[in-house]
Length: 59
Image 1 (tube, helix red, strand yellow):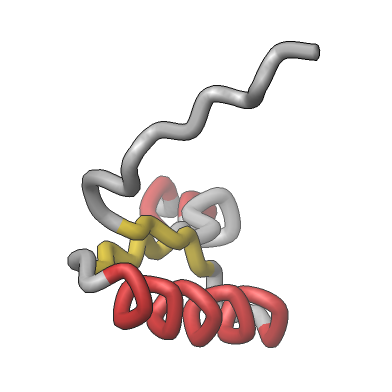
Image 2 (cartoon, one colour):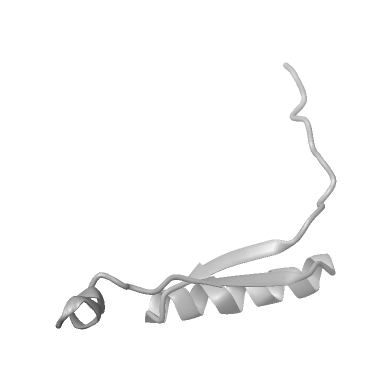
């Protein structure tokens, strides 16, 4: 049986959020994981721009 290859932890912890409760939970988990791994945390915010396009295109 082959042994699983393990790579060292590297890079940053990245989490995407959208303002929802589950995204907040994910961000909190990612923050704790970044601390545990001693890595930078990057939070990417996704916004719903489709709803705003109505106002931008109004004349």
